[in-house]
Length: 167
Image 1 (cartoon, one colour):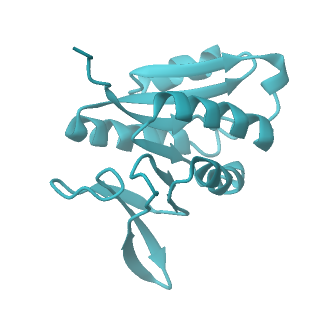
Image 2 (cartoon, one colour):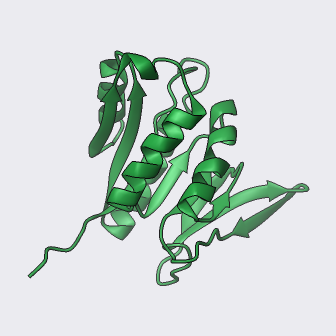
């Protein structure tokens, strides 16, 4: 008998402007809340060089697991390199939800990743909620402001896997 795969919520660790913008910590906090509801683990993705500080920080803020690559070639953010890495990992491990901060890098990165993964994306969200017993894009609803009004959106993908949000 095969053991069932544990659900996971991935949070991209964007630490470049950490002291001015702690978006990754905010996303980890929300991911922890959602993970408790859907019995999932929270996984932080940390890529770069000399990243031990960030691994410890994200673990202290709720990440159950860290997927880290410490390589001098990753010291500078590179959209194409990071896309290739996360695309490969996501296809191998199939996360339920992927959260990426709405930083300058995240705004460039998230739509490209969603396209490569053939999944929906809700960009520039101001929050997200989970509604029980309604499974749309793996039970996740993303909330964003549009023209001064609050809207709920549901990203979708052809196979119903991996909802992506840029928050």
